[in-house]
Image (cartoon, rainbow, N blue to C red):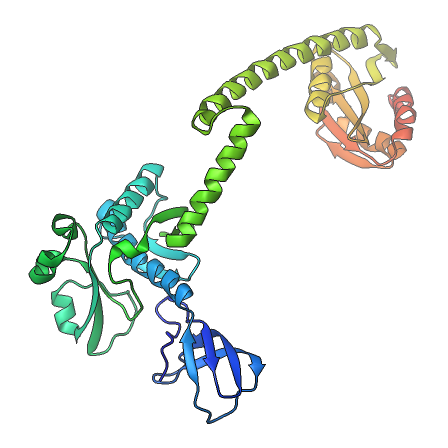
Length: 400
């Protein structure tokens, strides 16, 4: 005999202490490999534990309370999902642990924020209603007549255990004894379940969804917290909000407004920076065009330039190709301490057989790199920035 719950139905096994006449064992998990056999897994933390000793088992009560809060909350969540999404939102799996609960259910789409808030509101309203939770054993046929939900694919015996939450209209004596007779009828959940549960929903304290996502085609997963875990999560979020407010120089209630103002200011500054960059780039384009050279009847530009980033480097090359009308543009730059080369060829020269990819590949050897690309535009990177000027000096020779 043991007071410990063995892992089953998604609920994790209990933890606690096994105390013998000569030592103690820390129980980390309890399993039931076959009916009627309970295996307590753990480690000896004091003295020795021997076969055939009479021992006392103490369940970690605080951990158990956290588990039962989460387990009853999964039943409320299941009810809320079906009320919100429809009866297709059936349970596909669950995990009930002391620190969190996880619930998988049928649904083709992800939940909207509005649906998540509605589900949370329903569950928390039922928690505040402090509805009665009780378990009854009955024939499976009687459970079905009551409308008790069963986990699809699970095998049940002739006698099943039904956990009922609320459903006060079916228990008039308990309904009259309730301190919340109207709210008591607000939730009605009946499920076949062998797990441990709270006595009344008010013991759950508080319910908070912290994650929702897909785990398989047509199956969604909700992760949530209750009781102490939910309170700690709220405290952490509140502290994060306070920290952000301090950094923004405002009050927590004004954080969103302050962020909106900062984002608007950032957008305006970025637009101004982009305008100035375009203006500077335009000046670079005019200067480089004025310095173009000719070799073998082909106009070309071969120059080392300063660029703010890879996008700006590419944009400068494209602008020069458009403005040069007929010619080849070869640019070199150092971005993030790495040498880069760019070759752009106008359409008429591409038709004449010039190929930007082949040209940049040859030039890249001088910077210890490689590259390639389309006939009209190509880039290459390397490792040796000292070879950049040498690469640019080879352009005229390579034009034949």
